[in-house]
Image 1: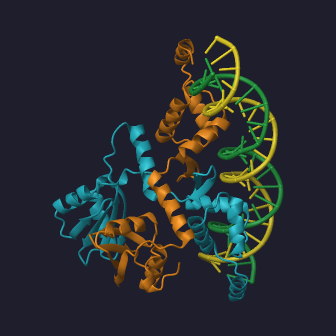
Image 2 (image 1 turned 45 degrees about the horizontal axis):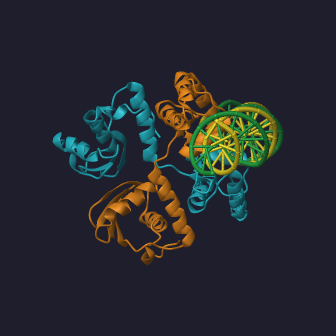
Length: 179
Length: 179
DNA sequence: CATTTTTTTGCATTTTTATTCAAAGGTTCT
DNA sequence: AGAACCTTTGAATAAAAATGCAAAAAAATG
């Protein structure tokens, strides 16, 4: 986009898609919005005019949905990501006819820290397993309820750590559906 | 209903509403159902014939909803009831502008880590709230008794994190929170 | 039982949401 | 810059979901 175009975009308060998505999230968490037209109106108040078609796509990508509230109406909500994992796991469990061996939902890194999201209640067991493996690259772990924080040795790259965890937690690959 | 009628109902596998609702729940937790017609068909396979109108009402009462899955389609899910409480509480909280008792005493940063001091015993609840907000900038949290450690995504600056926490924890007024 | 009241359901229709298709605008090459 | 490509969007439309209303079924009552 040219400087010129950017200038006008700013002037006219036309926002980028990312900004619109954020605005949508904040609107639906702060107010009771019950359909896309209403959301359209709210966005318009903020000077952001989009069509219902776009909102439908936006809400789909944000995984927003509406649900019955207590007054006979509907409200948009953003379901917790853990629920989605649970739902998918449950489906898988039923399909496969076995309890999933899979405890790890995701692994993320930030500098020397690895954040491992687990199924609820499994963090302690997972941290224990990691500790027991005595990997010198992993200095220590702390489990919460569904999260393990692992502190990596300073010189360990994210790639190395990823590889390490893959070996340590081979089941980490089983969960096909990423939410 | 007469004994006689009940007998025939059983015979013909025509179920009560309650049974239908249960069947619906088990169908949508076991399979990937993406619209009401598909659900109708599944019920029909079980010998239970109802119209889309009825299913719409059933799903509303079960608080079932559909959500985008990874393949561009949709799946019905049953969001966790706790989330709904949270969502509604959050909305009300915003509406009333009423800050709950101050739980956050201070926030400090060290590189990619945020250290949040809370009133004693409140760390778990706070970490929970942070987790529920599903901020991509916050990779994970671990609560102690009066401290929450939150690991930030690498590219997040302290200023951004500060702003994020201000929005997330509006009660944390000491930091110039914007509510 | 017969009768009244309440609940549940289907039909028809409206309302809401999703998608197709084409076009506009941006990006990335050479 | 021009060409090939990708992303985003709106208009129109298709698809899906919600609902008003009346009838049927069930439950409650005398």
